[in-house]
Length: 424
Ligand SMILES: C[S@@+](CC[C@H](N)C(=O)[O-])C[C@H]1O[C@@H](n2cnc3c(N)ncnc32)[C@H](O)[C@@H]1O
Image (cartoon, rainbow, N blue to C red; front, side, top):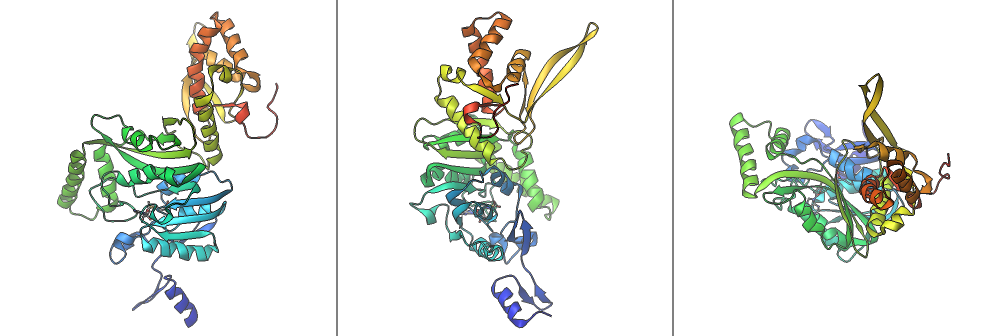
C-alpha cells in the first residue's frame, strides 16, 4: 500500500519499524497546542526502550509552560527537554532555543518532531544538566526535571539518578549562572522536607546568594506514605501484593535514612537582578487558570517595588484593584436584619487566591480605582474609625502589602498600558 521509498524514509527516521506482522509505529505523534510532539507509549517502559523512555505531555509539563511569559526573547533554554514540549512553545516567541537532555533518544524524537513542525530554531544538545551550554547566557530558562524522590533510578525522565532531591538542587543552584541580566528561570520541582528544618529550608539554601529574586508557589506538602503509594500504584501495580509491600517499605526506609518528613512540590521562578534580592514563598491557589506569564511578570514588578520602596513612596502611589478581583460576603440574621459577618476577597483568574478581609479594608479596596493616592484613602479610613494617621498606616500597610503580593491590588505605575483607569 505504501511506496517503498516512503517506508524506507519513515523507517530511517524512526517512525516505522518493520515487524514479522507488518509495519508498526513505535512512537506516538500527538498534536498539542499547534505543534506535534513525538514520544513513547507507556508500554515502552519495558525493554528495549526502558530507561530511555521519552514522556509525552504531563501535568508537570503544563505548569512551567503556562507560567512562561510569551514575549519575544532572544535566547531560551530548556533543561531536560525530553521530546521538546517546552522547546516547541519557546520556539514560537524566542529567536533561538537550546534543548538539553541526557537521553539521546529524547533528542532524536525532539529532532523528528522539529522536522514535522518545520521548526528550525531549536538546537537539541546531548547534555548532563547545563554542561553543553557552559559560558552561554539565556533570557528564559524552563525546566521540568526528573524530580521524583525515591530509591529508584529506573527512568531518565522520572528519577534523574542522583538520589534524594539532588536533581532539583542541581537545576536550581546552577540556573543563575546561565541567566542573562533580567532573565527568568521557571522550574517545576519537588524538594525534601527534613527533620528539624523548616519545610522550605533546602530551597532557601539553594537560592541564597544566587543574584536572583525568587518567587515560589508551593503545594501544601505531601506525606511520604501517600507519595510513595501513588508512584508505586502507577508503576508497580503488576507486582504481587508481597512484592508490592516490600517495595513500598523500601521507599519508606529510604525516606527514613534521609530523615525526611514530607515532600514539597512547587513552581520556582528566579529572575536575575543586581542589587538586594527578595524571596517570596506562598501556597499555590487550588488551580491556576490558563497561561499567566504576564501576571508572573507583574508579580515580579510588584514584589520588587515592595522590596525597594519606602513607606512614603508606597503611600504616594494610586492603586487599582485587579480586574479579576471579586468580593463575597456572608450575612447572618441580627435582630430583624441581615448583618455581614465576614467578607472574602478572591481573584477569578489566573491565580485564584482567596482570603478574609475586614470591612474597612473592603471599603478601602473599593476606592482603589487608580486615581487617588493610597495616602488619601488611608487618611480617610483613619478619620472614619477615629484613629491617627500613623496608627492607621501601621495597621493597614501589612494588610495592603499582602494584597499587593498576591496581585489583588496593582500600583498604577505597574499597570500594562491600556485604557485610562475609570474616574467614577
Ligand atoms: C520530566 S521529563 C521533562 C520532559 C519535557 N521537558 C516536559 O516538560 O514535558 C525530564 C527530562 O529530563 C531529562 N534528564 C534527566 N536527567 C538529566 C540530566 N542529568 N541532564 C539533562 N537532562 C536530564 C530526562 O531524560 C527527561 O527527558
